Image (cartoon, rainbow, N blue to C red):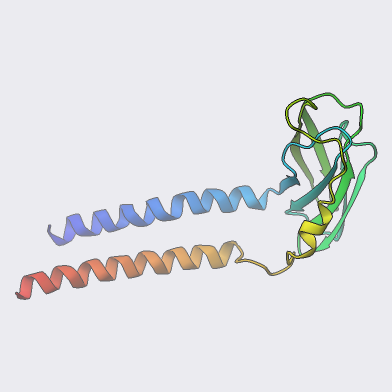
Length: 168
């Protein structure tokens, strides 16, 4: 393989590696909502985590909840809990989180009682007590830098391997 095809292949490798990361980073900048458990039963407590808000407080509202949930935190990661109404039927329900600078929309799916779900309240807040909500992972710039460095290292190894074959 000549230098031109090697360069083209390396460029395609970088685009393939960085393309999905850029899309994920863009989606993360829009804000995300995560609920645990993913499919709670009527009457269960749900832990909510939202990312992408710049303020330290937000309110999550849904027809599935008995009352609006207050979310608190720092550095764009807010968390809190809400109780699903005991008379709520199974299905998907919209959740609207109103932050200081934006609105993050999400969806929660309520499980049917007969499908192995339990109506007993779940203390999901204890799960988040052990997770660091600030500075626990790389931000977008750090992830992109890491992917770029890994791509450069892969190209360097390929070039070195190719040179090693020519000298033998």
